[in-house]
Image 1 (cartoon, rainbow over the protein chains, first blue to last red):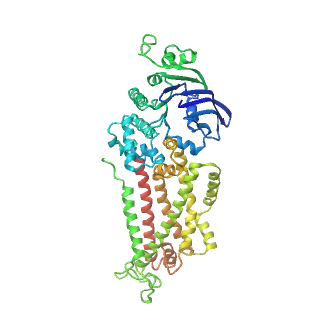
Image 2 (cartoon, rainbow over the protein chains, first blue to last red):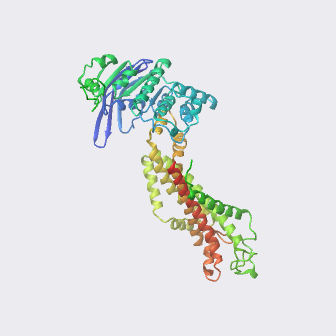
Image 3 (cartoon, rainbow over the protein chains, first blue to last red):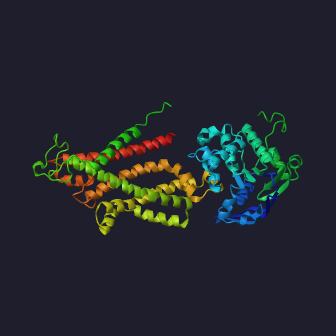
Length: 269
Length: 268
């Protein structure tokens, strides 16, 4: 078992009182497995991921439960221990490729950054590893891109750079928080392809967070559906896609625009 | 690229280059001794031998302007170095980490900034005594708050950007994030702040020397020269004209550079 979350509970303290953002969340992720986490905005999926990554501000969020990653509880770690795990074994790819890269740093340096922090590799070896990661993330001509700045790249390319940066240390788990939401549909499909290849070839486990069951279905074998901070349904993605047990999941499925499924003429209006 | 020429930057760089070159020259070479009096040349007008004329003690005004510009320039740069380096470090830490320390430091900065810097400079000089190095120290400390505030604003703005969060999640440490990841993004604003700061430093030095608490005679600076020349304003206008002109060009140059930098960064 790579990641085992037990009874995760997140309470956020705001000025107007406390909100329980996630309650009784349990999830087990095998080595090399791809699991989807689905729900509408505000369902707690991103808060869950951020809690696992230690991203929530400690003074304003109360996280209880256990999240055992590779034998150690992430929630019990202090900052220094967490830093050792982050990037090295556990990486995250954010939603916004346009704002997730530093405009003043060259692509190569940004991909290499984790190596600089976590390994003692020299510049040549770092460059080599960075180029490999960039190729793995599906970037064409990594050598040419290595010296580019982010503004020279399209959104899809930037998302690939983010993926390359997340992969450069060969983490065992990649958390992808809405990695395709900001991209157009054809690029979405390509990015999902890339993630699938990384999952199959490298054996990197993926926790894919999305509001779109279709996106999850393209990549994951298993899916967890969340609503208002609670898991409402989970199981094999095909089962849930074809035979949703919960009314909410059905609504979520129906909320996707799809050709031919709706009434005659609806898609043309 | 067919870009419109950035006249502010071009003109500013030319003026800055000329005045800085003038001041730098003054530090190493002057045609006459800037301090040697000569009774025969008292208040002599501009001539071939003394292109800027001579002052009330017969000292060559060109030589004095050169060395005065050098003194003003070096004092301004030293003040700027202290204010900028310390201010940026304080501002970066406060902006990025926030918290109680940030609030306290910023209130202290507010308090310092609430007084005119010349007035505070007077107080400091009254305590530690006049002289070139004391002026540098006093003004340098007084320049810290403005840079700290400017830097803090920038770092505060970048602290929660996605790319900074991403770097944190890669395990990148605090100092590295501050100075490798955020600082380059803050440069455009800090650079134009630097040019305004340079102007203020030149003016502050001039004001303090004008009030007689800066450079001690027989050394001189542009402000000191203007101050000494004011009683001869009608009879020997070249005494005030040349140092004032150099000072104005110096300030104008730095101001234009700042404007040009901002314009250029804004376009890019």
